[in-house]
Length: 150
Length: 296
Picture 1 (cartoon, one colour):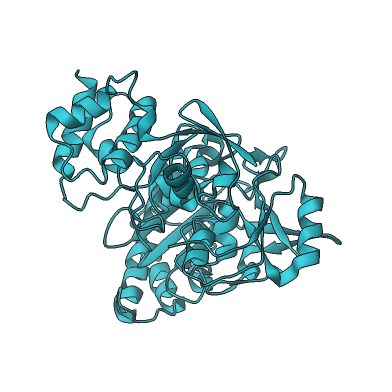
Picture 2 (cartoon, chains in turn red, blue):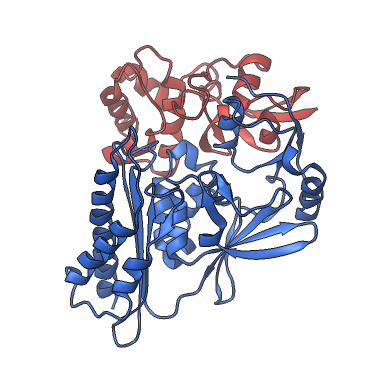
């Protein structure tokens, strides 16, 4: 049995050791905001924060997440109120089909937590592990730039 | 893609890990960051019975200065840690530069230096930087430990000198006497999540009279392993460039291109790669020398 701490809540789980963190978040905890895309670390749609740092959860064994703080997209809103980054994405049209949005927003959060006023280059670098196949990067970058000015 | 079935163990000491490897040998694989191992498991390229995680062993994710003797890097130092560490930026800047070019921010937060070396990809970002720094790796099994120069550790694509019962426990970067500088450059068709088409690292150290006393040039993705160029080192050692545009750097770059053994594949032709070895080598050498002059 393992205990996972996700979005400041503890879960006791009995799971096979060959389950990835993505699978356990989605299938056991029903936190389906984390998406499974390529499953080999190329697309970033499975991004979660691991002790505050963005990682591909498809390449993390769930058992290896024990003892660490995991934040998923569900952990950002506060009592039904969207996080400022989420609001900026809605306002600025940073969401198209939405599949990459949870990962994009979490990568943006990790960036902004360290660097509240990033340059455009720093933003593009910060989200460079997250692919958007609607190719709406411009609006995503504008959304992240808008967070600071809100 | 699903992971195959395996047993998982997470020893808390190197002794325990070595005992497990002694018992399971080729049936076991060590897990560090998992950014290569989990992909290979999912793609069914590997099917070990046992996964032995090194992540519960304390002190493996840090770098330390060895009381003036150089640097000791734990095998679980992540690329993000190496890129952002003040110690690495100050003492071995070329390694910090290479780490910053690896994969993506997401991959860099998991991928480790030990994993990157044991995986032994010809286009590894970290290996060329470590080669020019003269790095050694420490390998431990239940009987003892041995130290191997990185150049002798890397044997071929995915092949290293590590034995089935050994764990890579440390990377040592010896201290360089005199002023030194190193530069890493990577050529690819995009900036992130890229496997180098060609990469190059250069390192120069000066004697007190300004002559180059140590010169190392390493090349990636142009041979079965990342390689050191003996030709470039020979051209440079003992020379006294007048500035960063000195013709000796061009000559060394030509020698590096001759030492490379690139192949043609879907990412580029052998001729193009050889040409780019020359370009990248010259740029890294000029930039390293420029930095030395600036610091002087």
